[in-house]
Amino acid sequence: MWRCHGRIVSTGDPPALVLARCGPPAYRQVLTGGEGSTGLVVEEWTYFQGPNRFIKVLRFVGGRLVNIETGKRQ
Image (cartoon, rainbow, N blue to C red; front, side, top):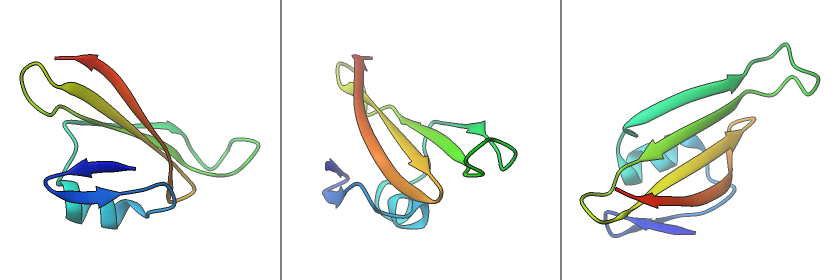
């Protein structure tokens, strides 16, 4: 679970809901496409929350949020 802009996103949420609640990420990377062994698209979205705040990296697999990782401070 992560609170962004006063709204909560949680694992299981689709990208459209995260985008609506948190806005666009600063960086978006597609890690694998449909040709992998699982056939699922894996994406990582990185959010910079401001000076001296922790970076958040959200991972989506197959169109669902599966992991919210806290990175280094900016």
